[in-house]
Length: 102
Image (cartoon, rainbow, N blue to C red; front, side, top):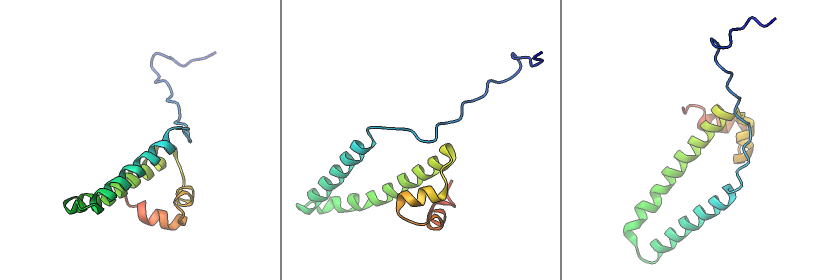
């Protein structure tokens, strides 16, 4: 006999899927690379004022990578070894770079 009062218990939350298949990521990354390359060409064509903006993109990119790593670790439980492998660095290097964030 089930003695649990279902009206008093919270429904269990489904565990997030570990790996999400997102088809458009490769296309989105390629699009982003084209935009950055075009920005570089525009600066090279004489728009020296935009050089600072182009350089500032590296800060934005580092922040985006950190956000991605934090999300992969917290939400999906990826290990430092898995993250390091995808970045082409060791587990220790990944943990040293991103471990103190979040």
